[in-house]
Length: 426
Ligand SMILES: *[C@@H]1O[C@H](CO)[C@@H](O)[C@H](O)[C@H]1NC(C)=O
Ligand SMILES: *[C@@H]1O[C@H](CO)[C@@H](O)[C@H](O)[C@H]1NC(C)=O
Ligand SMILES: *[C@@H]1O[C@H](CO)[C@@H](O)[C@H](O)[C@H]1NC(C)=O
Image 1 (cartoon, rainbow, N blue to C red):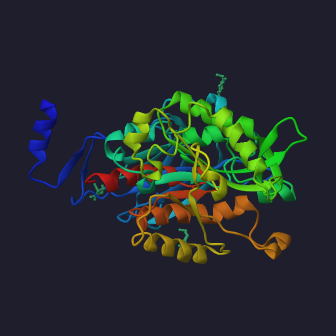
Image 2 (image 1 turned 135 degrees about the vertical axis):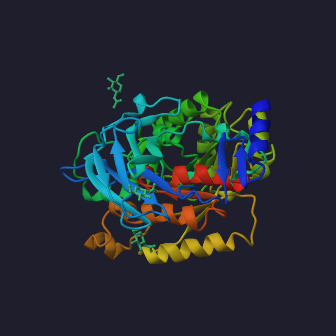
Image 3 (image 1 turned 120 degrees about the vertical axis):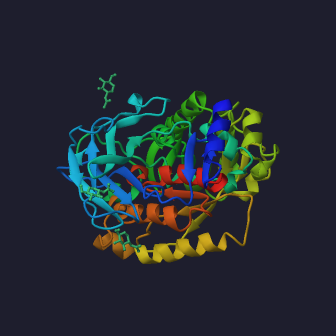
């Protein structure tokens, strides 16, 4: 504490602010070219017969200079360490494929300790490392920022989310997808891995198949992906090993629910039994609960449910998150749509969180003629821009932002960084 006081006194003449939560100094007005600069690593969603998990480097650096270089390493960057790839940025922001394939990391190799997964990236100026980042997991990012996030309800936290979270397929080796897979697979890591990487909003769609052993399945449309039991177990494993808050949002009932509410009652029975001891009852304070209130309740799972007629009858399920879909087919239209909802959100503070669905939506002919490519191609088209927009335009309003193939965006690190900046003086 004494040291901190001395340090603060030393810097009190300047604009430097010490963030207790991050343990970092930040200077909002100094001439440090690197203060707002960013470099990051993403894993491409594109899969061909030859390549899977291609490493891509993205950067955002308004004050880049000719001669600056970006280098990729397989361990912590240090002056003199030989990079495996280098590039010379030719614009203030951009993304570059490296032609290098990232090692496959099974979920069982991920731990509940924040870690860099082999690859590191550095920005060098005049041969000196000025900025670094790595491909990393963020299993405790909320808890680590308890002081700055604690007083906020979920609607005021910038939360990374995944679209159709349980419609994942895990490929160890390069392979080709069939026609159906191209339009139903939205993620390349399972739900537990998504949570360990930092996702806190899960968009779940459920199918009822009474003639199968599992009965309840996670679906994407009519496509059945994994048994719901399996998804539930992954979420519980995450909650058991962290102190993080997770939204498990049941958004659609594409198969087997019909018009009558009986199947919903059965499904809520399943959720209540499976998540007993985990879910936060709605009467607690509902969506107005602050994170501190949620933490002190000891229950960190919020179950959203998109069927108003049953939500009112159960304590276990909450009104679902508002999905904001642009139903757009081009990147320009996606920008315009997201710009509209983020700008409008300023005028309408709400307690129920909203999720910006940052994806393209192909129409039937796009699918038949393969005009936009599959979901992997569409994610590759938009995820870098979405990351950039939420870093530079809508970082102050963002609530949930849900993407496809989350590792191919920088939305997790963007959300963490802006939760810090917008709730402290940094
Ligand atoms: C998306 O990002 C690319 C690459 O930086 C850029 O050229 C393009 O203008 C961006 N598109 C939009 C609509 O912002
Ligand atoms: C995953 O864990 C296994 C067993 O500990 C180890 O042999 C393997 O090298 C690990 N793989 C990666 C990519 O870390
Ligand atoms: C980088 O090195 C060049 C020549 O050695 C020098 O002129 C320049 O001022 C240096 N730039 C920085 C930012 O140190």
